[in-house]
Structure formats: C-alpha cells, structure tokens
Length: 118
Length: 112
Image 1 (tube, each protein chain N blue to C red):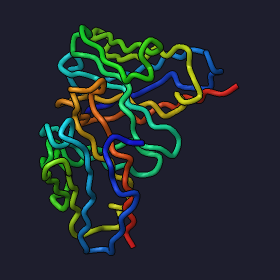
Image 2 (cartoon, rainbow over the protein chains, first blue to last red):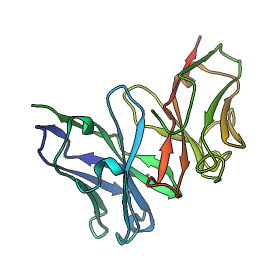
Image 3 (cartoon, rainbow over the protein chains, first blue to last red):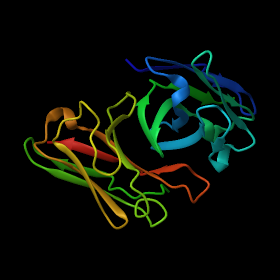
Image 4 (cartoon, chains in turn yellow, orange):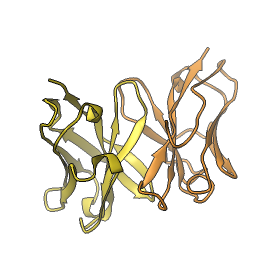
C-alpha cells in the first residue's frame, strides 16, 4: 500500500523557516518524480515544486523561487521541502504527492499545516 | 485567479448525472492529454478520479468519466450518490510555462 506521511508543519513567524518532510513507503521511491502541492485555507490547490527521480532536476512555482528548496533522499525514501523567508501567503496545508505521469499525481499524503503569523 | 476555469458549484439529485467543465487554453488543456480530475472531501487529501483526460484509476467507479473538446475538459458523474458530494478539481500539465501543472479553482458538488 502506497503511503506518504508528511511532518514538520507548524506555526512560524513571517520571515522564518520550516523544513517539511515526507516519508514514503509501499512503492519504489526512486522510480517516481515527487511534488509538493499546497492548499491555503478554504482555497484551491496550487502546485509548488517537483523533483526528478534522481534529484537532478527541480522546478518551482515563481512565487517560491529562491525561498523554497525541494530535495529527496532516495536511500531514506524521503522527500523534503526547505521553506525560508516565509510569508503570510505561504500559509497552507502542504501535501506530498507522487507523480505517475506528466503533471499528474496519483497518491497524496494527508498534508501538514503551515501557519505563518506573528 | 486560477489558471483553469471551473464553475464554483453544481448540484444534482441522487441518480441523476452532472457534468463539471474545466476551461483552459491551447497551452494547457487544449494542448496535452495530461488532464486529470481530483475529488476532495472536507478535511481530506485529494483523490485522483480521472487521468489523461478519460482514464480511471483502479477502484474508481465507472460512474465517473472524463472527456475533452478543444480547450475544455469535462468530468461527468452519472448515477449520483450521496458520497459523491465533494469538491472537484481539474488539472492540466503545462510545460510551456513556468509551471509544471495548473489547477482549476474547484467545483463544489452538492447532492440534493
């Protein structure tokens, strides 16, 4: 059974940092691109970043470029999102997602909530 | 403003059929086969319902179907059931922009 379990969310002040983690199990992790997708409270879904199977390519939505870094450790079956210089508009539930086709996610984690407030 | 346009809400009675539209451009919906649909119940993670315009993942009832014409994709749910009440989001691959994919703003389906 495919499982994606996020952790690391919480309350952070504007300008602060957080590191999200996603533990993957039930599939061969290094065979898949992985993404982070977020959802602000009461809003729709927004793709944030993705990373190639071997970590050699990374892509970001413009609003997080230079502030967020996606990474993975295939030996640990884990995906990460380092978030720096956080802003109020970054507040959302962040989902770890497995991409099985171009621009397509087939499995999602349960999400981890990031709150940015002073 | 979301990149793909969906109606904010649709409704139907049990047993009826409904269709949710998703309108984009030739740079996303109209240009690629990678259009997908997700169902999201309150407080839950999204669930893939349709991928590559019209394919259903294993376990998704055949009451759910997808199609595309030009720059508009559609999700049809036939034989509505109470458990279908949820938000539905469309998504399209869009490699020619700075994004990997774009989502619609979501449609709230109410089963009357």
